[in-house]
Image (cartoon, rainbow, N blue to C red; front, side, top):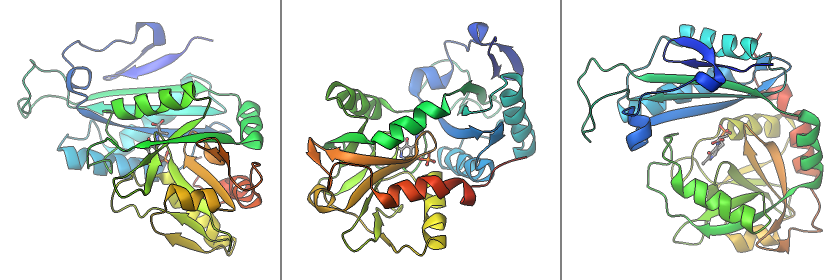
Length: 286
Ligand code: PDD
């Protein structure tokens, strides 16, 4: 089946989907993005993703490419045209096309918008979650505004590649004080010996993950205690469980950190239960 992408106002065959060489996303990584899960043909947590997109755009002073309502239509249409039942939706907004000059282009420059959707094998994802993933840790070398979901992801790319080369599924960034910030493309969590969930406050050093927000709700509904505080790698190694959250991974158990098993080295019961219950709390579109 041929894939279709939405590019600057048109639905085009994926292979012919192109943007201008002077798009500021291409030249300066001057743009923002979102990734949503698609489940049974529906976009998961669209409202929250569009709210975060709007915040990211505001922080970078990029104009919205269209109204939230129109954008919602384009997102659903892209899912439909690609016949995605289980998969991922990607959207990216850049400051548009202009002659290369660091400062903002003229006010009338239209933001660029790209939307793609692709199918993913849910059974494969579940098999991976049953096994869990290993993580490695690395010094956090990103800029301070990681709360903005920008497409400037080179440190994240290098971190994820380092993880892959080490046979791990994710890399955890660690700040100068030795506290874990987040993963290359996920938020980081542990479950203490007492059974409390611990994750870093979203006020500094991390992206406020939508999956993270929904997991707070699942935890509350499951009578689990959540402590929003930073934790060290040493505390994670003493923890009963560890896991990561992201739209692409939902709740993914972490079974090893820098080669050392977390507890018995198997996905923990709390992580598994949060994963199983996640979609009860998530908002699934119609
Ligand atoms: N990334 N932190 C970072 C650095 C991320 O890139 C992501 C997600 C998250 C989790 O956010 P959410 O729960 O809203 O997906 C946290 C996406 C999935 C990506 O870049 O592919």
